[in-house]
Length: 385
Image 1 (cartoon, rainbow, N blue to C red):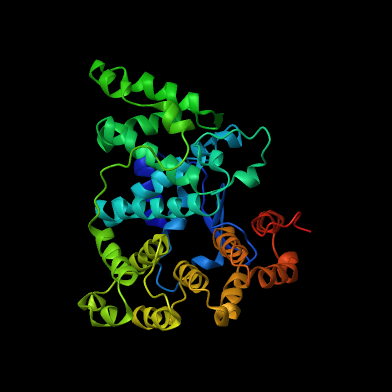
Image 2 (spheres, rainbow, N blue to C red):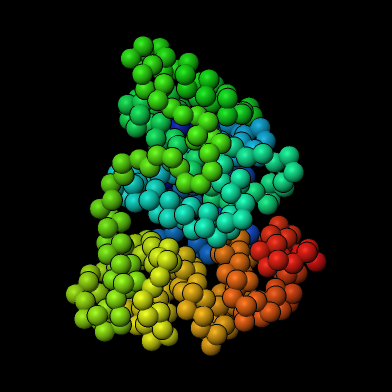
């Protein structure tokens, strides 16, 4: 098991683990989240069981919550990034310590792909919810829930770390912050003050601190205003595969030597994410989708992240004959990360929307309330009832 290694590396980054024991419980398929970070006991979705441990970083994420979220907690959901952004940041550091900095950076770049997808789909009509600190005066935290606090927040922390001297300078501050506020609830200004108090001890840091545009990072909409200088070596292969499939006809794809270059499970997820991001995919016919399936053996995988993106290609290609397969995946689990984009995209396909609504009405009682409520809004229904 990688769990013990994840905890050991998290302690190097964050300080001692204070909760005594750590257990994992795999929840039923109706569980709407990837994980839930209860002290001592993490709930995880069964969609993590890919058969090759390729999705185990979610466990690293939930372990990181033992410090960021459980030890130091955001005071309210307007400052949710103090929980999830910090946790993704630590998760990435754990990945880097175990698999190298190239893997850490690929992990971050994949997160940015997910953020791009979220902003274009889930939050397309609510740009105000792409802010890092959101105004929830007239909005439920359930409606505001997205990948923004996770990925935009962790990107901000990586920007700060790079700006202020790298891990060797930033990690001692990070441990001090966690120790100062342990067993307390905080707001963004608490973190900001702690950062300035720590780094102003060296006058040389004033120049770097003056560069931070807090208003733009915290209250600007859309993608992060600065993307760190990540190592893109593992991403480049994914981009090449996506470019091949998006810009060429089926015969050119078949003849490409690129198809003989293997991708890891995580790279395959990112390749499919990159492909879905393309504004146009040349000749996205059933034959081309079938070739993609055959080439990467998608039909044989148990990896839910891969299958999720592949069934969205069916929707993109408007393959009505694959509707049973699309709905079978949507009904196999009710993790909101998966079902919400699928229902939202089916709602935007006029011929498919009535089928999606009919399916939702059949299965909504199997969903947890938060999932049923948000999916009903994605489908344009009045309520989740």
